[in-house]
Structures are given as C-alpha cells and as structure tokens.
Image (tube, rainbow, N blue to C red; front, side, top):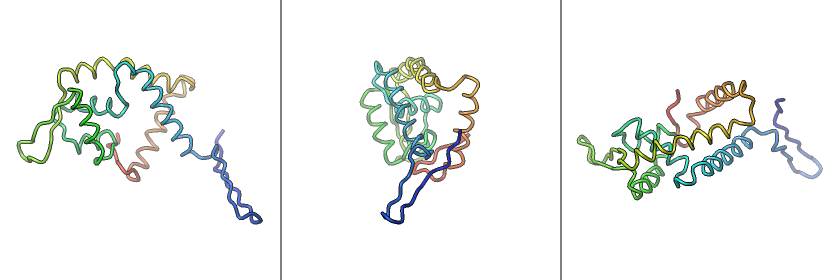
Length: 166
C-alpha cells in the first residue's frame, strides 16, 4: 500500500506535524543505514566499507582510471574520494601513478593484494545483497531493483555526487 506524505498543520498551535512513515526519503535513509550495517557484518573479516569495495571493484574493472572518473563511476563526492583512496593506499591495496599527459592526474590500479581482496570479498558482498533483499518475495526483487534504478537515474543530477547511470 502506498502512503501519500501526510502533513497536518495546526492553526491553533502554529505547528506542523509530519508523518515520517509516509516519507520515501525517511525510508531510503533507513535502508541505506541497514545496507551499510549488513555489508559491514558480512565483510567484517576484510575490514572494508561499502565505498571502499565499490572503489576497488571499479578500479579492478577499469585499471588506470583517474580519481575524478572513479568518483563519478561510483557516485561518490570528488572532494572526499581522495580520503578513500588514501586509506586503500595505506593498506597496500591500490597504486597511484602520474598520468603521462597530465602530471596533476593520478591514475589508479590495484596491487596484487588489492586484486586478491577484491576477489575474496565478493561472496560476502553477494551475501549482503541477498540479505538486503531477503524481506522481499523473490518475484518482487527484479521490480524493486528496476524502480531503484529509475529513481536514481531520474534524480541523479540532484546529487552532490552525480554518478554514471545505466
């Protein structure tokens, strides 16, 4: 059942009451918290965050990617992706190298340890995805994912960190 956002204004008390349970943004924020918690639970032995995993996987898929393109690819803020890369670099998982065409640009690649971790964490990541979707009947999961992609693509430009949409 879909609920329309419910707002009630009381003239006498000059207050506005909003039913949080009727707000999609409230549930999207809660689902993000839950998704991160499940990912961290499943992957705790690897000491990796969802953003770090996304960065490693994107670098694995696109060796030599620059930080700005990486940020856009995973929908992460360009001003904070450097910190993510710093932490991965400190763990010996990524290498930064200067571009031949622009010395200011740092190209990213995985170390052997980074490639190994990226492969090794996949089963835990997949278990996390399954747990996130587990409350939905299997028949509704494809539709849910389609609707999520539609919402993200339709609102992508409103993001502080627009990502590449497919």
